[in-house]
Image (tube, helix red, strand yellow):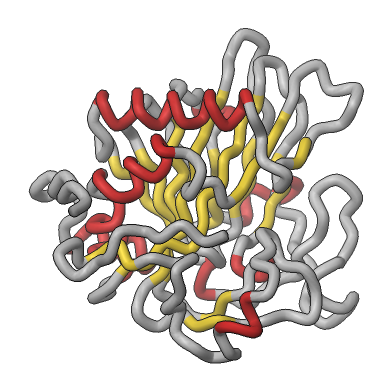
Length: 287
């Protein structure tokens, strides 16, 4: 039997925090992870960096003095990732934020910017890149290094309530997911910051940022001498459904449409139930 997760600390995600999440699309949960969980996650990220999966991609230019690498869907091979997913209070926190009876894992995402990385993460929404429909979802952005306010993830408050906007490749600005012109393009948020309520927090290890998959977000590079290792966890609630696309989603789930029809709940070994913990099944390794 898997170990029971550590309970969510009392009062950390109360009604006011859940209300702010649903109104703004992003909140900061201070000290959600304890020191042992942070250290476990740090080990997992370092192991991932030492042996990236075939899904990994470098997201910075060759002339960047730093290095930005991302990797996806490694929980089955990375025991530290898996232990954090199963045993930390993250799933219980997600249930409270979403107002959902159940929580399922969708995927994990590692993002590391090495010291001096200039590459920005441009403004975007996440959900248009995915094969998902629905509103009960949460992404956790979990740094294992201290993050300065100028290098943190930023959000446009309330943008998760607005329309889907055109997803584009970060490096070449191509519309690979939806046909060109089928969705509106993003506004110039960076050039007109005063027109928006931009949220962002300086963070210490143990702090966790939660955001809805449609919330517009972006991040700057990192300063020389400052490393930014982050683990992001995408979790789904009761109303989320499979939405197969005619293109490769990010991340891709090859062959999933043959096993999970369009509009189906996300009941599949790739997406184990994490909450309620007593009803969940231990994640099953999928070939």
